[in-house]
Length: 168
Image (cartoon, rainbow, N blue to C red; front, side):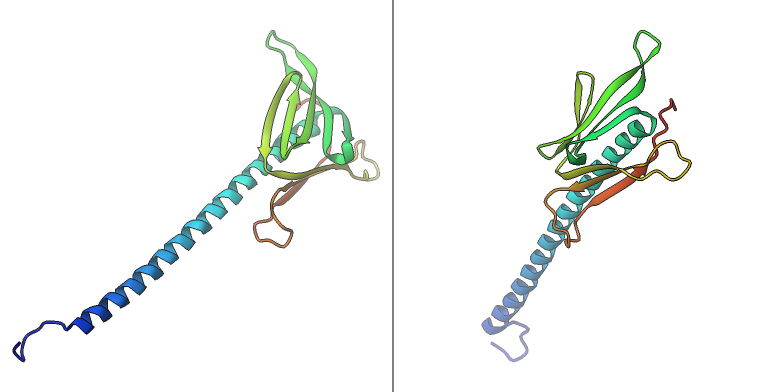
């Protein structure tokens, strides 16, 4: 070879390939980490959505319902809601919310629907009524399953409802 040739030696090629391999492995690892974070956060957001959905349904039914009964340590609640019949007119229909095998179920008559799954606990409690109020407020707490208390993915949401017992 002549002195002015622009070729690379075998050692230089091996060194360049080693550096490129290291950079590719680091890039792949970064991509895998990013994908796992997206998966975890997506699952957490779906859980949040389910918990909010349950709270919305329960709050509406308890706010406008009557004959509210809390039992099984607060993991089940019954009430009657005012619904329109298909033939016209209105009637009070029984509704029950229960936590069964990690899923909160809403049963209205014979119709049973799962509202959210992956739930660790459902706690419904009647709070102390303030002086002069007719009904005592009800607190609804829903906690997602599979998350430790100190984990950043832990989800526990609650709301307080004051029953009106009237039609909206």
